[in-house]
Image (cartoon, rainbow, N blue to C red):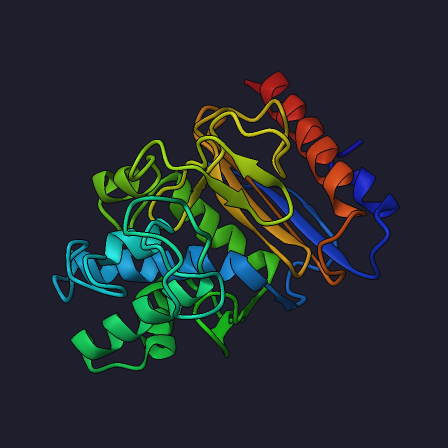
Length: 272
């Protein structure tokens, strides 16, 4: 019996999922090529493209972007002080972890200005094409406007487990806590002290409650989306899990996601 079988009981019309290890897709569920809205899982793809731009020396993490005193790194790590969905300043730079989709729009504009390439095209050329992600498209805002499939995100998860597009040290830095000690809210899961984040990647640390499993390691990184989607990578397990649904995140998801992820972690741990 697959650890993914419990997905049949989820109160959603459609769900697709995959467990990925360094050897590729270990288990799958549902239609792997069905395209779903990603919502904020989009931010992982955007962060990858921005890091490619950094390695290509089109921009640097220290380039000014957003409010005065903020940089590309501050925006990626939700430490710029910008509001969630408006380009309004709610705190000083580096004072609080304010989750800001507006900040990702500014990041995309920064890359566009530096490269002369529309950001959706840059993402397609820098990330999707080399990874063979043929169904992935950024159709809207850089903070939440992508669509993709489990097949594509499994390829992306493999890149996060064993990077080829990025230097390993670049990804390692992006998935470490940036601007440590900042408190803030994880949407839907309340305030955390601290609310650890990397460069576009949320870091699990010891947050509770959380959308990953209680048994996921503190080094686990990833993102969830209000479209009912999530992707996590647990470096301790050397594995990743992607789940895409067509039901928006809400009270139904909070217990199911964490319980499901604990089952996934247990299954992976028993195989090590």
